[in-house]
Length: 551
Image (cartoon, rainbow, N blue to C red):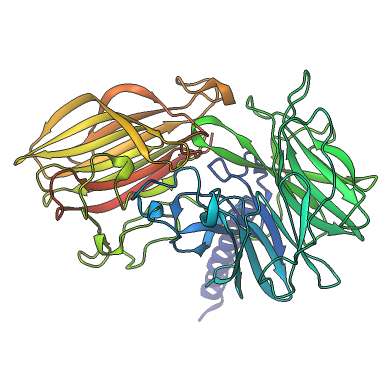
């Protein structure tokens, strides 16, 4: 090789490597210097508990009647979260979990407490139920991803926090300042250890709940949400501090802040980073999308974990970690090519495993009818994912050739008030309807006492393959949503016969609401297939496509 050729080759190699380095630097800059924008998770992720093990943060949340339950999410930077496992696959104490003899809408798993102790993960949760169905579960696992094993069942503890002390003793703090000690093997409580560790103040007429306990520098810190019903007072996060876990405790309001045009925030926890900084993770009611998570600085001032910016307010952004973690999300598209269902999906109540498949037609999700029901609210095997703000869109491709007379299939903005795209088969004919549904539930059994379906628009179908899409908008000041929580949330419904040209169906701007008395959850994408006359039909879902607008 002559000198000129060598220099030319050297120049090319230098340019190539410089380009790679520049590209890597740009990607790294994008990954690590963009701030964490609030809401940190603009989706239904209520009742959080967050811990850090090594360089990884783990988060658990409430999903009530959705299965598998008690999702575990992981992140290295508090910005990119991904579901890595569930604490249980299903609950089996009652046929209500199977949508029979009642339901568990708005109940099921609540407010899980997550801890890491002596090399193992522990989770404590108590369904919001009466009697034996409400007994507390304690699970353990070697890894946060699972598998999780049941350690014990014991009496009900409302919104509780598990706590392992330095001396080996174990406690549960629950309700409005109640404590019990557990046996060292976590098999049950130690009788005679119940005590009230503080009394709420006169202006705190509502519950103090959502207990989260940490210990720092020899002091005990109990964080709780405080519902205050008094002039000039708002929902807030309070902290009780003591030198002994049994008290006496002193109290400090550590956060009293609205954010983004929505309600005042409270309920969550604090966690430290590998570098020693502290952060608060607190949820906020945001109407139809549900209860979202925000992140904020936690500044230790005079021994108190004060949340928010220098003015005590929830900030728009928080400086990022330098973690190198790639982008991740808890809501995802899916082409159903994997023979195992992705962790981003949850079923409405316990699924009937024989009535769905990812292998009978590879590359498709097959949903089969299994029993005859008269409403979507009692239909087994409705598959769900969260919706996200500020705007999001979900679409599915459905092959409905094998539906039977009376079958209903499609996709819904699923909640106690539901907007749905319903493919119906009547005799040998198919039609597509945009339907507004609602249900009423009994107070005790959560049985569906009544339901209504209003067909807004119907079109005949001549093809057995159809594309369905739901676009949701959770930006403040848009649509016709519920103003109680500051939201103005709506959805629009579309269909396509070729996957390219879309047409709207319905009147537009369907209101997406939040009702704590019924489902107590944010709106979900729901994919369904159920029989109203005879079981045995099915549909094949080719793909679920998801997009989220960042602004």
